[in-house]
Amino acid sequence: MKKTSTRLADGRELIYYDLSDDTVRDAPDRRPLDVTVTTSEIRRDPLLGDSVAIASHRQGRTYHPPADECPLCPSEGDRLSEIPEPSYDVVVFENRFPSLAGDSGRCEVVCFTSDHDASFADLSEQQARLVLETWADRTSELSHLPAVEQVFCFENRGAEIGVTLQHPHGQIYAYPFTTPRTDLMLRQVAAHKASTGGENLFDAVLERELAGERVVLEGDHWAAFVPYAAHWPYEVHLYPKRRVPDLLGLDEAARAEFAPVYLELLRRFDRIFGTGEPPTPYIAAWHQAPFGPLEQYAGVTRDDFALHLELFTIRRTSGKLKFLAGSESGMNVFINDVPPERAAQRLREVATS
Image (cartoon, rainbow, N blue to C red):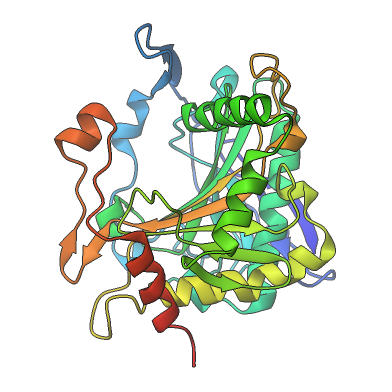
């Protein structure tokens, strides 16, 4: 992997990640852009104890442009985009309309391929491995920023999810705090460790799931399963079998096996609802241990956290979506219409033959 860092016309950082070590990246950004101005602010809710990012500048962000005006496609001739080069393997740049910026963290866009009409599932294993290495490198770099406590790599796919750019891409949020979801996990880990005399909760969950009927696929180094209390109609958790706190902890064997396992999982997601259906909308979310202090979780260290990816869709059946209504949005109590055991069975049925 070759990494080349440069700057866009408005001062934002852009990094190329290339498969070939002899690739040269020197095309300048020819757009007449003003320096980016953001108004991101973090406010803490005194009743819930969580944080909200206020980012009014995002109202003007690009919204469903036509394909020939996609800002994530390579620049070509007089059609200039966020990527100055005429092609790329993987590229990362600071979001022009970030939810988090400055002392409030950082937001980056990760473009998986220059092919506008592709999806992550269309990538080769070599390309998918490059994306994994990119996520790991960005996790390392962002974790060293003074304001950052947690790094979150994720992909939203599909207009139903709220995606406004159809080009295959994901994002990375570098938060200045530990997110509420991670905080809940760490509290559960601490409580379980105290009540069992030291057992790790993530290890216990993985062992239980691997012995049950909700396993979707399993390799030598990775395992995917539908969790016992799945929140979403089709939800899969992907774990490395050797517990590590973050992407940086993955060894070579796990990194090498990730691509074929993950690509197979994504391709199954596209087959859940049968042929003739539009691509399955999904969210793919990496959960990594915070880089900030963990003193509030008595007896817990970063090594007690288990890196894992959660992949889920809001489509519950053909032509129907799972909306977050009163119970979910008002009380955060999910109601799942699809039994996890049935979801796992369906994801096994659509395996590549």
